[in-house]
Amino acid sequence: MKIEAFKDYDKFTELCKEVLGITVTTIPDIIIVAKTDNGNIAAFLSGYISYDNSFYIQYAGVLPEYQKKGLTRSYFTAMLDKDITYITIVENTHIVMMKLLLAMKFIPFGCRHSTDNNFYIEWIRRAKNG
Image (cartoon, rainbow, N blue to C red):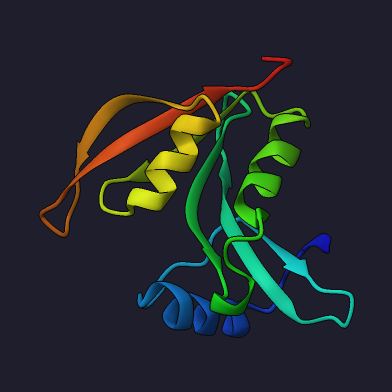
């Protein structure tokens, strides 16, 4: 797999609809994709870097045919090895993701009420260099 920056916003919104079942109305600052050796997109991750060099993840998804191959863990590990001080992700219903976050030593540190009338758990992990 090759991980690279991605700028095709139309394709990104299609991926979010296909994999996450959501309609994206705002484009994140950073989009990263994992591509197979033949150039197919296998996974995506997007978000923004905040003032304290933390990475806030807005959307992350793995296409069904590439799931359960460790791509999400690879993304997070690569980011934690960079100059990122924290990774923050908000999650409340995806049990597999919450188990992964716990396994990777993320901790729940807050709760947020959103405009869709749901409560979300904020998870955070300090990077090795942070």
